[in-house]
Image (tube, rainbow, N blue to C red; front, top):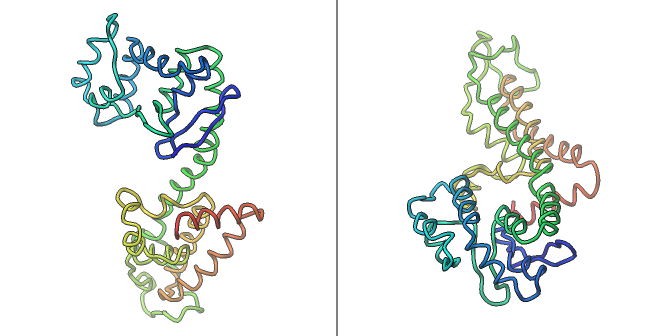
Length: 292
């Protein structure tokens, strides 16, 4: 499927699955009906081939420059032509061709900017401006906040997994807990399984343990965990819950008590960090789309 972005008052298709931009449309905006020819001429340019090789070496761990040498050796000759399928066979990942309703040549954003620069200075400037705004919206500030929060959650995870010997154990357990022990204060904190307490935090936040999430979403869990899909607000709440969990551990609360208290705090903190009704609605929409 494709959606549209606007460059220099022209609708340019973007592939929703890959985020690739239709360079054929950019070419058509410059010369109506001539987009495919412009793309073909751009691909036969020796500088373009050098760019493709450099980009693939940087962004494609599986790229084999030796296999690409066949294309590179022919570049620059008068009769040189290269198709998208030939580039794909040579191991490139930044380009694809589509047929039918959404037909055309689609490229990664960096390739699209390179094409616009080759095509026309005006389109080059317009393309950079649009992509910068798009990047800031999709991967800029919001992603920066999300990545920062994710890193903080990961770092603070150590608060609930740190060895008891490295903690300052309270002399007396909190009197509210029903899970007290008498004796040496250094031995009063019950040994905990860090994964169990981590799952209590997950249950309080999302109502799922890590194992339940992996079973329900096997494709998502191949290389990531549920926290990688959390929103910025959810990650802020998780940070708070992990800090509270550390204190609950040291005060010897049972697992049931921990879950009850953290569940209450999770709801409270979500409302605290959602400053506006719009933010709360965005969170609900994200969770509905995500499925958990």
